[in-house]
Length: 562
Image 1: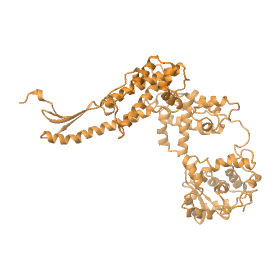
Image 2: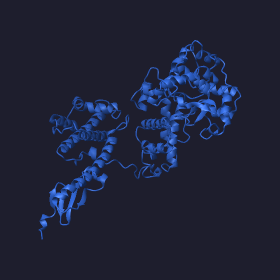
Image 3: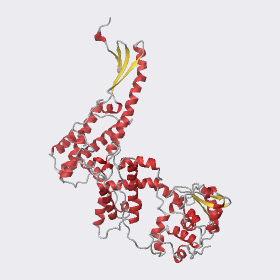
Image 4: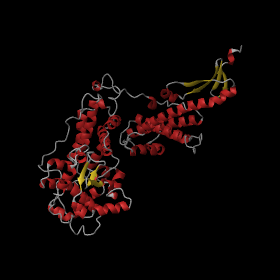
């Protein structure tokens, strides 16, 4: 019998032989054990000799390594999330330290998977000494700036570090970044020597976060779902969007509303802590927020934009009440309503909160007067044929009532014949997502619509207004280009005053149908105010003809092109 001290016998790296046979073992890096769920891999290898066991070992170790790589990818993704704090969110010194340490470790991982990387095993002793001086408080402001200025400025530009240079808060943040930098250098040296198990030791990087809800938390009673109620609104949003399935533009609107809301709060609150007071604060901030803030005040948070705007000699005008109510507050209310309906919250704290609009007795937008139409569609402005894209955009909007986004996305294939009637089929990304058919007015045909379609097809174009479509598609913003140019430039050049925009063509269309005595049901169908997905347009044969008859009744005073 063989002596016990010979068992287990190490045959090769990760391969051992015990009394019962061969087996493979591999230690799991400490950082990945929580993900994989154990400390090491173990697998029996059935073999009659060392040589056979070694051959079989390669496949077993490859399986171990694949699991480690998968876990490492998960850890890397978690690091990436931690290393990329939301832009504009002010971070505490501890949060800055964690974010920077994670970013450095992520960068080190990326370097080690790059074939161009080669471990140099060298650390600048002078840099390490300078970092230690910053941590010990032995460096003055200029010394801190020389050591960590580049790192600190990156977080300042992102809005994560807002303390002014030289202030106690700035120095405290610098010390935290120095801690993260020094710890990350230590990990890199360890990794260069083959040890990937190292963990930070400084309390700034090891302290456990405070529990989300404590026994003394007065809002703890609002936690219905222990998993979801403690998530932030930004973490809840993907579930809401996945269930609601909004259009891309609407999904973007939800995301912007959540981002602005959290900027106003100054923190990413768990949803159970969101109160009616928070929503009211959001509403008040929006009332002070200037229009076109992203262009006028880039890379600033909502509170910073408001402060900067107030400091101007002539502050920019705030965004409109209708935008606040129908865009931002509506989006926030919908998300929180979803939380209440799905047992994430006991109620919706945004219910009933809106800006009370001042009653003026006038519509937000007005239709163009006959005089306006005479200026817009004058013979002088339309004397050259074929018409350009801007001219066709205005003509089509006037005689179809399509919204700007619908006109911009109109495909050539969507201009087709239904039961012998030439129609525009509205079936792309729209405000209401409601499909409809709009018969083509004979005036558009007389002005050369069919010729334009033929010419564009010859060029292999796909859309009726290709330039507008491409520019809108690039930015997912159909308000750009022709629509915006009309509202800003054309109106001014033609001396058209009052609350009139490109959207006013739609108002003229609706008003024109009313003045022509068109039945309300047909008018709603033409304007997209009725769901057409299973309506008369697609089912009953007489509907298209009836709508064609209604369209031909349109006449606009001031329009003389035909």
